[in-house]
Length: 80
Image 1: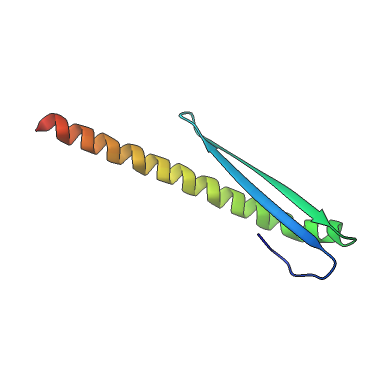
Image 2: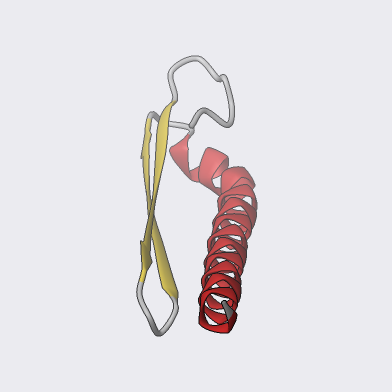
């Protein structure tokens, strides 16, 4: 994911979501190269954190909806 387009700075952010029965875990790694890396990181870290939070919230919401749908279909099949 490219955040800033600055010559001589290479950036890469990778996100990984793992969902389990107990919840979800999100990890991300950031690779910055170039002499402006410390400055770029100070600007891009809040953005990377916001994206991580949004991803985990979306994953949790999707999991809750999937469980709710499965419960509804199970209840309907038991009634008929």
